[in-house]
Image 1 (cartoon, rainbow, N blue to C red):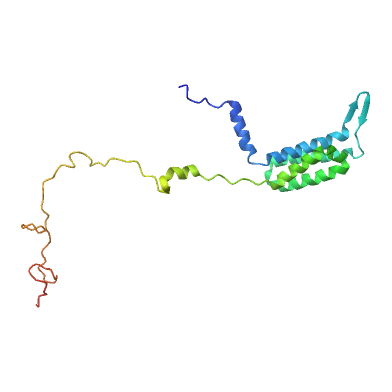
Image 2: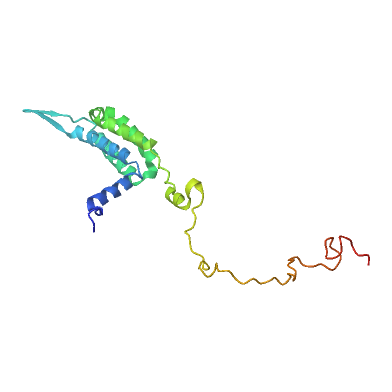
Length: 204
């Protein structure tokens, strides 16, 4: 192996390329934003903020509702990853749940979960699968310069040898006369240029 030969891609590079191909066929970022939006919505109503010796409880009377909204947003995010055909429904549902979380879950998780869920839902609704790439490489291989079909590789003919181009002995054609005229003689008299007819038809 020469020094210029590129090394085979490692395991990490191969996994990264597979993940990028998988990510490009689905609304990946929409699902990620929706899931991230559900985490603060479900967490803050059950969290306690510790400030020195002071404990600040952020729990509300609608803690169960906040948990349900957060769990639903996480489920919708996974649905966008693995069930991309429901992207429109999941996007609209994420936007509605984000709006409901404002009065229910501490202003939608202090506006953090609300904004993340809104952005993810909008991305899910607007996402569309890309068109498959055209086989440009195949067309370029089958066409030459200027769009003309590429010529087949040159192959030598079987008769291309020195002996083929040697002069062959002259053989007269069967219809060639002795005086060198190579047109057949028409003695029927029907042709205007028949031999010896002088352009006249015989009368009988």
